[in-house]
Image (cartoon, rainbow, N blue to C red):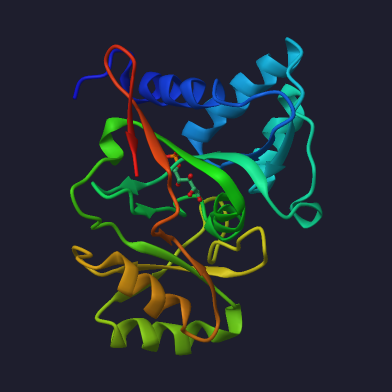
Length: 229
Ligand SMILES: O=C[C@H](O)[C@H](O)[C@H](O)COP(=O)(O)O
């Protein structure tokens, strides 16, 4: 699908559309990535106009952007539930299963998105796919690298340690852990794979989000399409 202004315009449409769902008094999960950033900026403008919200950041990056644009923050450790979370995705399947973690933020994102009454995914059309087939990011304790790699191979996956840009060595997450990008080909049963990955000792969180998204807002040529679970 063509998107005038390119993918970033589509991301902006989706982010602003989702931000408009936030109402006075809400506690809002602030996702990570270039699409969620548009929602955070829109929320900052709404706060300037008088909206009363508390944001819960999912990463250093979303926390810093929220501070920059004036969205008041509350710590993840201080909340039990949220009214709404707005977050991006690397892939969205027809049944709203997601792959997340392209920015290595999926551990905190999963906590925040799962705790929200309403989890809204924001995306551009390049993220949509009938079935998930991208590599699944798996955050793990550094000492468990060899054992987790072996367990992923036993699930017929191919793990690759994520390398850092601008630094020698691996990506280290906001939580001080490593990330394995695990290729499984087309994922025909995301729920089963999600359970298998979650039960590997040493895995902190993986990027399969199954049964969590309530709706997906996709920026298009002339607006936004919404799919609901
Ligand atoms: O770890 C990063 C997150 O899961 C992002 O939400 C995801 O990678 C999508 O990012 P973007 O909107 O930049 O494509």
